[in-house]
Image 1 (cartoon, rainbow, N blue to C red):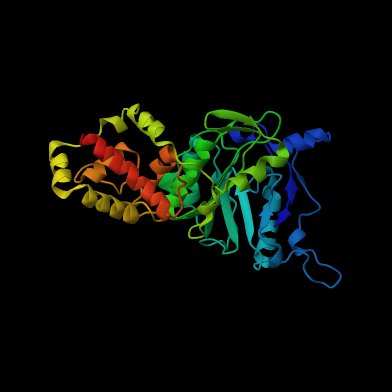
Image 2 (cartoon, helix red, strand yellow):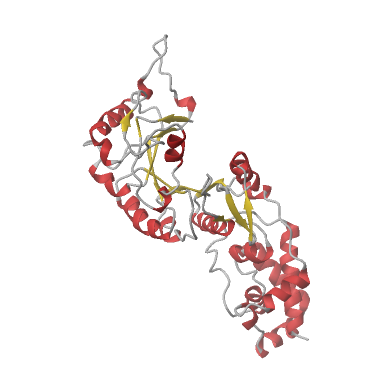
Length: 368
């Protein structure tokens, strides 16, 4: 990874800017981060060593561009074309441009941009639902080859599912806020975006916890040195087909406690077997019903990203379907929320048997 800052300084724009790390860092050394200046690294990708070879090579990884400012900042309009010229010349490098100003994109691209350059990824930030619904439609409608999204700092629950379902977003990153005045980040928000990414087949990175991290209703103060490490340790980053969720540790709920919680849910507790369902169970026998349950679980729940996940279990038509809704075994999101089994994990035999046992316990209880 290479950081290229052709200019430094920025203007705060939206809620995510409130505790900007650039402002915080500059203030600590007596600088005013609102003053935008061209840097000595303006032509960094073109610099060469004594052997007249480029100092920045493809082996160095992605070139993250304008990390102490915004590439589409109005104050940098006079310098931007020169950067596009450099990016064009260094077509062997991959550039990633993260911006809060995607609304200026169309007015800031070079004349030969066409439908995008293959070596440029545009990453729009979206710290809350309001900015998500404003920026992502613009990101999707612009002529861009590679689109990423980053929610950092993540300031609330965000639903970006309809944007992910377009298939145009390649990667999503989420993370909490650092610094002494950091606003809290709830792990529920992270997991929900991750689940939506899995459903859409989009890779996901949980970058950092932030300084104030909420998990299972408890608030933790996380030291700066541990924020990224603990996010990595959680295992909640995801790349389709890589089996990364297998590294997530979790504990299955105690059965009695689970059924007590389900009984307190207005939605789950409304499900019951009808007289017809009970007759079906008696006619087929519990062994046959168990085999049906095992088949449904294996085909509809066990894959890493089940087809039509979230809608794969009918609300009626078989006693097992009713049991799945009653016990929150109907989709991978509910399995994670109620049973702690991580989304994105191929269910092993033990996990499948656990789910079948839960379903059969409920069905047996309904038939007493």
